[in-house]
Each structure stands twice: as C-alpha cells, then as structure tokens.
Image (cartoon, rainbow, N blue to C red):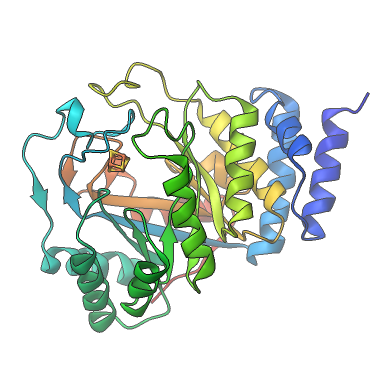
Length: 330
Ligand code: SF4
C-alpha cells in the first residue's frame, strides 16, 4: 500500500521538476486528513517548493470592490445576490476614491491592484478606471480585472486599457450554487487563454460541502486554462444567503488545499494565493495574500477599511514570519 509519505515525496519531486500532477495524486493529497501529522509534512514540502519556484517572494494582491450593488445573478454564497436582499443601499466608488486606494496599496507595497465588480458592471467604466490608474501611478505592478463574462474582443479591450491579469474561475458547483452556466464561464476562460492576458483562477468558494474530487477538478480546470496564479479561497458564510448556514472550512484544511495546489501546479502557476489570509498557509507554500476594501461579496460591509482587519502591515509581518521576502509592484 502506498503511504501518505510516499505520495507527498512523489508530489514534491514532481513539483521540483516543474511538472503538473495527475488528478489521482491531487485527490490523494487532498484526502490526507487536515489534522494529521502527514498534512504538516505536506505543508513543509509545499513550502520548500514555494522557495524554489517563487525565489522565495511573497506578494500582496490588493482588491478594491468597485460597486456595492445587487447583482441579478444571485449566486448562493454572495452578499450581492439581488434575491437575498442583503444590499439595500447601492454605492459605486468614484474614480478619485479608487485611484487614492490604488495609490495607498501600491505605494504601500502591493504587487497587484484588482478592480472587482459585479457581473454586469460597465466595461467602459472599468477600462476608464484601469487607464486612470496606469496614468497616475507608474510601476511594475499588475492591474487585475475581476468582472463579468468576456469575449476575445472585450478581453483585448481591457488589455489595451492597462489590465494585465483577469481573475476568473469556474466556481465550485457552477450552475448549481451560481446563476451562471458552466458554458459561459468556460467561454470567458477560453477568451482569456487566447489573449496575452494572464489568468488568475482560485479553487473557490470552498466550503465543507465540497469533496476532494470537486476541488481537484476545479484546480485542474485552472491548469487547463493556463492560470499563472491559483490557490484557494474559502466560502465565507454570509447570513441571509442560501449557503449562509454552512460553516467555513478550517484554517488547516484551507492551508492544506493551498499546499496541494502548490505541489500540483509545479512551475506552471508560480503564485499560490490563500484567501482569507493565513500564516499557516504561507508556512505551507502559499505566497500571495489578499488585502481588500470596498464592496466585498463575502460580507455585508462597504468601506475603505481593510476586510477582516487584514492590512498591508499584517501581510508583511506574516511574510516575514513565514520567511518570505516581499516583491513590490512600485
Ligand atoms: S458572485 Fe458575482 S455573479 Fe454571483 S451574485 Fe455575486 S457579483 Fe453576481
């Protein structure tokens, strides 16, 4: 019988050779009990691979939720879902407010600025925002658009406006817990893949209801569409949404999933993100954390204050504790 140690050793060597991992082994790693000693060994192996693949660099993804508004797609986990009635007063952050936040985060050491919108936010306004940020703030940072569905044409339009990365995923139980079809999500992923834009695609939103096979398939879809950043994001139970009563997965399980994505991606996706941020996950091979403000689909608030009190200062303290150096965008 193959032991957990054998599987971890195989995955570790495979990752150092730069190779992606097969589905069966990804599932076997995810099936290791998160509370076990073996999960700790998995985390240690993933952290060593992170040091090799990232040149030991931690990076901050600063995300600005642009529009606090009901979204007719009404995904079962999202506070913006129109059907759930959680968002009562709409608010759209102005260009000046967004540029000020982008300055704060980029001059503070973030590597990416993400403009996150609800599904049908105006593309013209999004491209104008990206242009304004590029014109105002010089530097070697990424602008990420996390918005609705894209075509080849709209993906290129975003790119010509200064966007360098698209965040998009085939969410867990897409079409069941979301109001969008698998087909439409895959069409957007194909448009991004066909463009020169980078793709960021996390396994999300992970809850205790998801099996290891579902997590593995989401991760492998990210790899099939050439994601250069992957990792894991938890489903945060938002009261009033249909999934709001199912508890969040444990920090250790999330860190384990991050570790598995690190080992399974090899050098294909050098950046592994954990959200919400977790020091344990950084110690287990994730190298990207998210600081977010504004409209947040995982909560009911809408403010300039960092979500969960996780700010740049805390991110850098945790990177230091996990022995990463910081890669800044400006
Ligand atoms: S997750 Fe996105 S598409 Fe779904 S309801 Fe929320 S904003 Fe709309």
